[in-house]
Image (cartoon, rainbow, N blue to C red; front, side):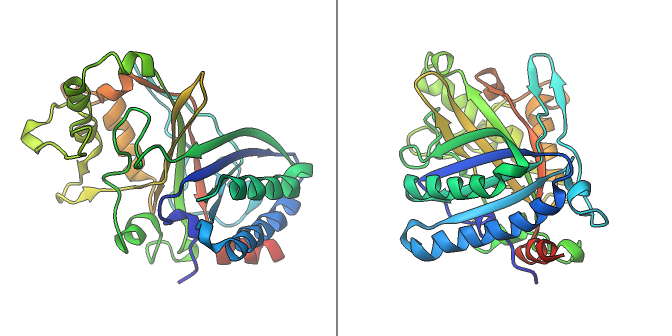
Length: 307
């Protein structure tokens, strides 16, 4: 099977740098070549600073894919699902390239980001740059542990990496990103029991409520979904908090072997169930960006970079 990019299923890190780019017109050939070279940048820093647990992901926007790789189309590649209900909105802010770099050292993330940007700079516009960081013991800035429902061990591969269902793109992964801005002033006015009711699990110990004890609007209720056969609908989250003294939030990253799980979860959060029970966490955080990408295998990126 083709080699998946290391950063898709990597273990959590202390630091991340997320870069979003738009490619200048008629620079596609150069970008194909440089993306393959960026893999070498990741490998170099991984080899030189192995203790920092370096990883990276290169993903191509759904809107840009056919320009960069005409004639090659992942089976389920689709635009980001634009959703709006009352004051809840999952906006679409498409961009051509998403590059994620993570490490246990902030300086290594910075050095990798500088090298990546220097390589791409003549051919792209930098749309957004976000620095992610680990908060306490892996918590979101709301104070709750993030990624509790993530698949563990080898099950990550089953959830996040394409296999025989799309052989031409085996080793790839569908990526969705959203930058959420939290209203922490409003959130922190709630007492802990109310916050726990909204999440559907305890804040300090990260113990999930029994299903029958969860409110229908609880975050865990709205995101822990089952298919028609009773199987869990899963994604692999690679999200991290970000922020400064003026603005804080979560940079959400979803990796999956199909875009459908993310779309179903987002629908459940924003539109809710048949009774209108949406995810109450949406009252305290706002998605300001949203984009869909595909992260092809290492083999695909290298082969296309030579053609």
